[in-house]
Image (tube, rainbow, N blue to C red; front, top):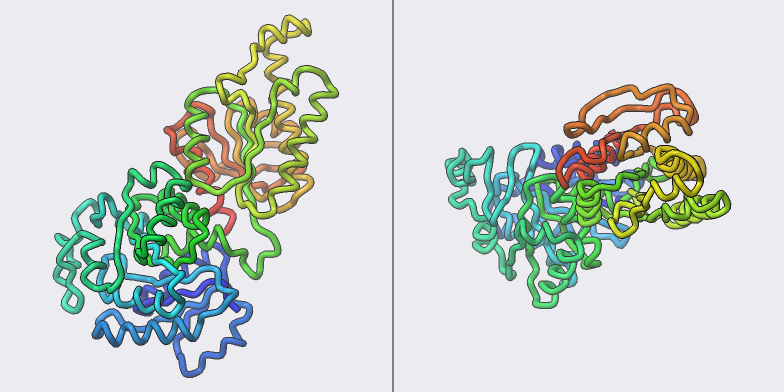
Length: 434
């Protein structure tokens, strides 16, 4: 049975969502003839997409269509239920959301994330903007079948739903997934069934998805397809993929910019992190070896349930930064030698992880010295440059060596704003599923 069920109000929207899911390597099947639907024939499909052709009909009829489809496709194997809505809020959004909630049961809540950043549709302060213009001032206001007279997402839903509605705004998203998880649980206890989220970027959708998963609340994704795709990537392994395509991030930068970027990543994404005790790397050969084994073993033992794993030198926190000059004097070597010793140790950790677990298909490196050390350890000839992710962050593939063709994003440790690391990891994950 499919692990993702999408009920869309029209065929065009259904197929658009299917394309988004296909980009994440899922097998998506759109039902065109419900009378000939045989669920047994769809056992290899990751996602079933069912258009109800209900956008421009009476709300009660739309409710019945969605309710009946949800009842038909409801299954304990499903991890993501989605109510695909129009990206400009046209149609029977409230009644159709009610229908799928009623069909699935009272333990479910609707997570409404109606933005579509790639199409310049965002929600800020509860209001939808299309190409920076309030929705009610766009062509959606004069749609002959489904005119939209307000830019307030909450107002649209409250006019159509029988359940209590609330909103979470950009300020809530900036506080991270734990905050969102707490709010979702709080609202559920209060009996609120529909929660509307601000969202202006793919990174926001990532944070919302992580918060929903963290809350452990049963949910229905209500969106134009982008949020469904984001949360599906976190919960569902494609049937044709024997293992997840994982990303490893190796970060050795020791500056405030890098720390802010790491903090932002930890708020936005689900990950497994191990801090490397850099002091252990320079005290002695035995202690270095033990620390390398500890970090590698911890990642390998715990990475199965995570799409992103990070290995970070603990010097990123000011209180842990080493006085390299004192170690240089102690061992009668240059300061650069001590720095290289740390970089080479992080490169060895990276090499061992990728050698022991072939699920890691993407690598992010922060800091030019770290990237050089890793390239040398991998015996890489060079990097085939393919794209710029953000300024001073490049995407490409390793050429030659032990990991020829490995997808890699490299970035300077002080490059970018606080969101840049998260953007790079998100970009790399998307590339792995193309």
